[in-house]
Image 1 (cartoon, one colour):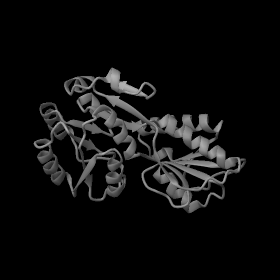
Image 2: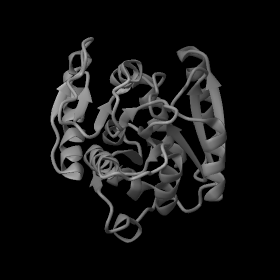
Image 3: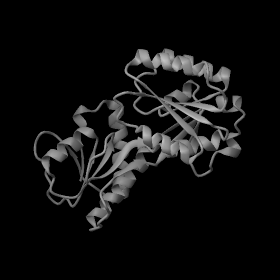
Length: 269
């Protein structure tokens, strides 16, 4: 059984959810789809549920489904529930980046002070695994963020990387254009969790592979339905799609034909 709240989703998000659901069906074998509302979920014939999205998960927690369930496409951790976050594991981002830009020394990230998607301690620890110093700046609002980005854009060098993180609400079109212009001039990499930024000139984006994420959720649900006692925990997302800007890569002296892994889903733009 796949449970999600379709009524509150914008059309572009519905497309993402449909891709996740297709993956769930592939991983599980087959599953009914139920649109969650304020009523009671019909659990007849269901062995396990896959609940997608923050609103649906909150309702599921309050409703006490009464059967094993898996949470997916969430941006926060749920205690004692099998869960796959929609946020890409920072260690995966850094590992993919290190393949392209081997001389990285620092990665700068600007986070909102109320950010819930990325943990500063985890970011620093993930960077350390790859010999990278992660420097996190915090901003209370878009004005503070713009000032921080302005300072960074005039001091970063080729050994530095600027990461526009998931859920970012500070980098508008004007600021993005400024950052990318400075990136080109000073030859530092801008990477982003938004693939659309690669079309504008960011070197790299590392974003969720929604189909594979759904497939993993389906496989986990199948294990639970078959009686597995897999410990409940939140897993970071490791199934990703890479998008790379060819022009920026050439400008930075990066040989995509030699440096990118052959088995990775990669979009060259």
